[in-house]
Length: 426
Image 1 (cartoon, rainbow, N blue to C red):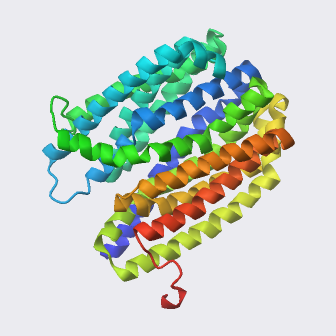
Image 2 (cartoon, rainbow, N blue to C red; image 1 turned 45 degrees about the vertical axis):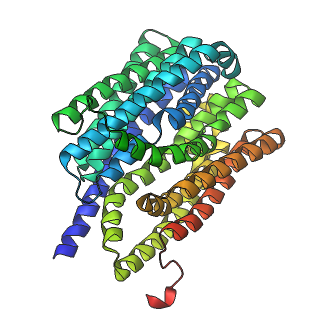
Image 3 (cartoon, rainbow, N blue to C red; image 1 turned 60 degrees about the vertical axis):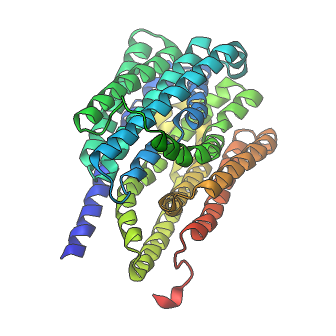
């Protein structure tokens, strides 16, 4: 009976995360035909470059603080006061990294503006947007570890709705172009961050006026080794737009971004399932039961088979779907969707094994794998974009995501061994 209840809890949590992530993705996806008709490919390229900047800043401002706060919840003997002080220490780190980033970008703003084709003011606003997104993620992570999927989903959907609503007003009503889309995002995430702070305080999970050097050091020990990891994620997920902009121009970067947004639907699906899966998995890893470990392995293999089969469908319907939704001006994106989707499938496979590394708290090798994969992506992109154009960027992404998955699987088995190849024992 207990086992059945636990399975139902996992399925219910997965469905809530899945539905909320679908709505979270569907709101901007449903308005994609609007933005592609009010924004030129060049303006879409500017939005893409802003997102690239956000990805780069996340590695150095965020320091994976939401992951550190979520992992702290599972420490033995932890009290509510301990956790609230730990989260307060994470906020202190976030404030420090944001100020440092602001000083650096004020000094380098003009050069960076020319390099990536963004207004200097947008570059500075990216710091506020990045810090705000980390605050929101800390709030979400505390709901995730407590299996409060409904709360998680409601905030996620609210942020997406607010983001798109403001963007529509600025882009469609006031005709502010790319600046309207960027402003909508910055204002939305800033307002939701204020709400997240209030909710953390209300639930007794945030004490800002504390000084706990041991907690600061603990959070940094988890987060600093992950800087290369997050940086590698940036190189895998965002640097393609930078390379395309540099070699093919902003218009081509905008077209690529549309294809990437379609493929991102798969990433949101995998993320939804993983969010429900992590608490379920960590509870079983903590029990260290041999039979449960074998069940986890079989579940993982079945999931891999399912999503690989699903990836094949995008080669059949992807080009038609992109043209139908985005319009003929962006039909070129249809040639990229299948390879980008396959890359996201490898990303979904990666999520299933990286959880074991985070449970072990030994994340150093993970950072090495991710930054190595990211650098491979950059090298492949530079080689293949020149030869194959936009398709070369999609090929590079897919290959690099596959390499990251295989290497991460190897590291996961080193950090937390599982019976991956003990087939005779099942």
